[in-house]
Image (tube, rainbow over all chains, first blue to last red; front, side, top):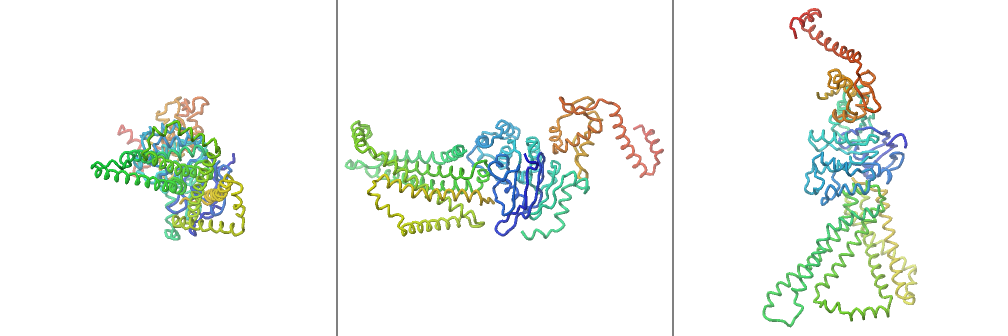
Length: 241
Length: 262
Length: 119
């Protein structure tokens, strides 16, 4: 096992001529919860999709656990996308079957138990579920794995504050403690207290990568406050997007 | 892993087609009794029966058309939506090789088309006023068996013909897949670019055939009549298999190295 | 007793303070077993690593002991508990004296007033 879980070197990604990430150098260790923070369009989703292999870098390298993104890394990465990705005719248990078939680290019993505790009936068809319930099912799929790396893309964006606590609680009580959780969000105050580290992304570049404690100790303010300060300073800089 | 992928692709196929296949067969069977095959029995009530027959045959044709339209749409969307759309978020994060994803879709697409053709042939038989007692007449089967004994390779011919059809189908489907994979390389108007790519591939294919012909590489085909029919089939199968395999790997390569789900 | 976390200081420090308070007020009595890091972290809605750091500080302060079999126990050393309680009391008294000073009372007057009011 290599020391760092995620290593990115000179990582850039452009969509056509539009840059989304430029020259990202990043190292993230194991066993921590990391916030990937930045306003919309700062490259959070792009970075996450690069890490799970849904996008290919324009230039630069990515390694997860010392390996380039591929079949072996996909087996260790548990990804919560920012959209629904399953066919509507399936039931939650069908998805659990699928995950059990493909991921060795998927815990079927745990998934069923998580469903129960989240108030989801695993035998129901996805078609009959509300959007919020489907999101819960997707969260169960992702968190019932004992993965090395959890990539959670905006897990709390579209829900009310009560549901946010619920989701964060589910993540906190279920993730594999030897693994790392990378959570992207622009709602920092809600998740700040669960984070070990914060990565600030701004127009495709890493502005800051620091532990939350260190930010609070040296700045005397919360990560949220610092974030607002940094991103309020030049409100027009987003114009190039 | 390919087996597991197939399991889920076939499950999706069964979900979508079981009802259509069943409906085609049932409606064919209904037509068997409503269609006026036995002319001669004009006893005045023909008008009503005629109307009924028109309705049932229309429904039958409708279901058959629907079946093939759905099959075509299925072949396209299982690939496009399943690998290049939202479902691709799941499929491409599974720990499987890209070629396995494509191969599973390809097998499923071929099987759907083959079964749909088989169902329509079966439906035709069901519709005919065949006297089933005659079919199970021993004599008929005996003579069939005797015929086979005289030309034992007839079954082989049948198998070769079937294989030829399947390979031709696979060639068509891989070409469609490759077109979509090429269309995916563009950042905008991916569907339009897929269509353009399809026609470009078609033109390219014709150019290659023309070139090969020009160079006289196919002259040996003239001698095939001398070698006999079996070799002819196998040469045909090989000639179609080569571009099919090439396009299959081209598709897998593009999906592996150029995937951009945005 | 709810967890209150403010924005201006490291979270682990605040967790240590609140755990300390829970111990000296007897919510976790002397000699009792503390909940696991994971349970406490989930309850407070914080990262387990942060809670771990807070509990490590408690150990350093002598308020808790790691036990190989039973997890973490609250200390039974009353001297330690009394000292911590005394330190906390001192903070409260300082706040009182400071507030009274703003109202124009000297520390002596403030102490006398406290006795007089029999609070």
